Amino acid sequence: MDYVIIGNSAAAVGAIEGIRKVDRKGGITVISDEPYHTYSRPLISYWLAGKVVEDKLIYRDKDFYKVNKVTAMLGLRACKIDFDGKKVELEDGTTAAYDKLLIATGGTPVIPQVEGFEKEGVYFFTKFDDVKKIKKAVDSGKKTAVIIGAGLIGLKAAEALRKLDVKVTVVELSNRILPAILDEEAGQMVQAYLEGKGINFKLTNSVTKILGDKEVSGVVLKNEAEISSDMLVVAIGVTPNTELIADKVKFNRGIVVNEKMETNISGVYAAGDVSEGFDIVYGSNRVLPLLPNAYLQGETAGRNMAGAETEFSGGLAMNAIGFGDLPMLTAGIINPDTAEFEILVDSYPEKYSYRKIILRNNRIVGYILLNEIERAGILTGLIRDKIDITPFKERLMSSDFGYVDFPESVRKFRLSGGAVQ
Image 1 (cartoon, helix red, strand yellow):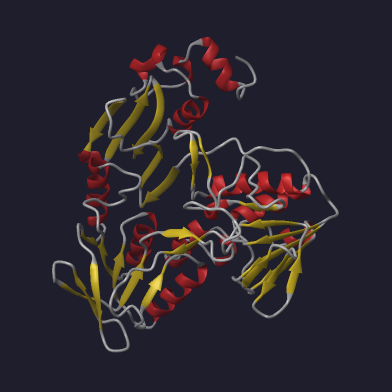
Image 2: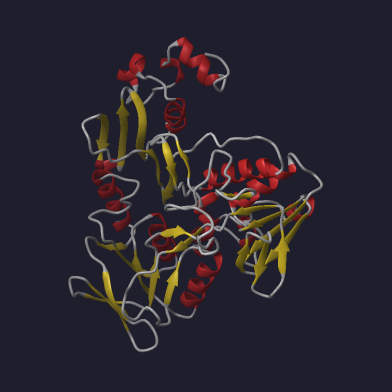
């Protein structure tokens, strides 16, 4: 059996390990346009800030490919999939034949339609090579940056650049930062914290033009204001990288898969940010662009590719991130807009402390924890297991809430991992 995996991030690692749990002999080929050993992309901002060295980015040991008998074709871009002939064509003219194929191509940055985008000094913040280019620019004397996008990627880029003593202005179309994972009140707290670290924000605004001759010298905003800048970092999100599937593989926002992570083409699977996985909160398939979900989807795909019947049990949108000494965790539905939801909130802006739990039919479907994150694991478990919280609802917002507050039947269920009722 010959397995081919396009991509080399968390989903690919999960797939390799999933395959090897079932099949120790089949050939595995990994194709990636990046030349690096599999690494953790969330850590690239920490590398830029000088908090970690390159070796610490690696997601698995250096002998990972050798131990798992993987042929790693790194630094080569897959340019076409021949689904009929069951082979992947690479940019250097070589091909990789497969019996089973996993598409784990991740996401590709959203490119804004901005005049002057072709100028030198415009960067993305998605891959290791992106931050290497930014680091080189800073080392050469660049000291000011405009970042488009106040999402997770944009703010981690801003934080890293401030560590390098770069003056940073973040431009965001929304009226708040981190609009996908925070509500307005929590967003204002985090914004105030980051402003205290020297990061400037221009909200409800956008970049309409990039100034400069060959190199970036500044930007013009929608409100016609101008900001001088040596660099422009684009961080307005990613979209599933589906360029290889042509019109053969079914997709909505991401590649459509079943519970085995198999596409509409037999023997072809998809996992990670390029695919749609089952979201246990929404009860439907959605793109779940998170490393743990990507790994689990990849492992599920790998096991099925090797012949073991396995189903992806589902995931949920969840983010664990921190800025300086301000940690936060969010999960599930965080901005409900209908009367079917009940919202519990504790807010202490002076401490940058915020706790919000969202209920539907007396079951937790989402939360925001800012600065006080100790109960995140318990809350996530209650979401996953769809536990009726009625017996301990009045204790949910208590600082010492824990397993002791659960009825005995729920406590046994949670502590046994769901093995008993």
